[in-house]
View 1 (cartoon, rainbow, N blue to C red):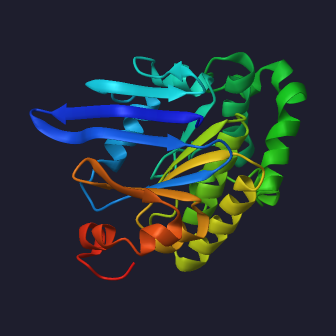
View 2: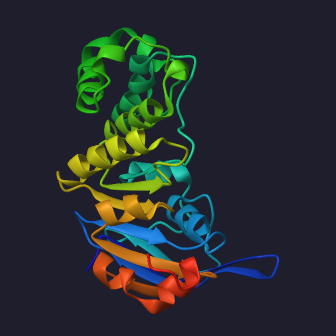
Length: 251
């Protein structure tokens, strides 16, 4: 039984069915990609995982507990952490200050924008924040203002901010969007290293190079319906996927 189970999830907006009886299961310690053409329902599904949307019907179960109806911060506290399509960082703060905010939130269970300024924060949290920056290759930039970073380094910072929260499930929405090929390849290698530690990931991604480099299993959405699911080799050869995703061309 998977650590994340999605059972018969439906979601409509003003009569338009965005998700149609979606079922999928994510195994613990694996990388599960969700792909599909624009408008397939991928982001809607992800938003149902993190509490930004509530399914009309169906269930989302994480490690035996229902996430439906929980607020986003409550879902975060269960160990489900999301990486957004556009890096969500504090651009006017240094990298270390950015790291201290989620680190303190993880420790104290509450968000405090200037929490690192408290006297106890430096001694109890700074070491883990610096360690995580080193882990993603940004230790030498810890005092740099985050807004000045390249797109690739902003993504590395956001990943570090997520990882310092000690997630059990990491959700990544288009993690390489807008990146150069070099930054994309560097991000793939970083995510491979993170996945190699046994962290469960769900990735929404349009770049098939990224998907086939990372995913252990792939679910394909089209018009709100899962039309195929399997290992990457199966998905590459599935004519339904080629037709829905690329008009019949080879993936």
